[in-house]
Length: 137
Image 1 (cartoon, rainbow, N blue to C red):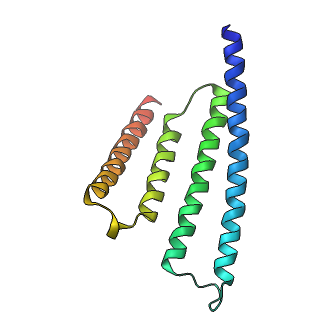
Image 2: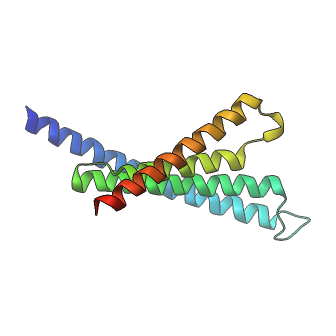
Image 3: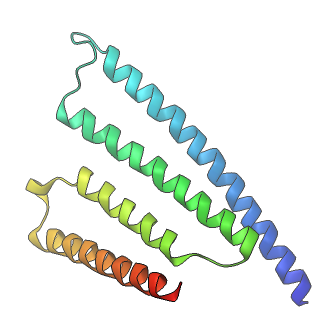
């Protein structure tokens, strides 16, 4: 039974990796289309306004998150373990994306405090993890 569950889990992880590859590829194509449309949109050529740039940066970071998640899945397939450092990096990138696309003027103060608290917690956690790993070696 345990052998069956291990095999089933491996197939599920391979399926997730395949779907993540498709999502990252399609996201990259969509980002390229958005970028070309925005740059060629009359009356200006190549100049983007702030809202358009924030949209593009948010999309770019979303693709980067997808790539990092693919890395987590690949490591899990090979080593059957999850590297906490990579998970922290994915979370930090996700929060960076949130900060970039967040409309500060229309956000509630508690939302901004919450985002700041999450960023602080992730930063401290990552620092502690890196220190622990450096003392280990």
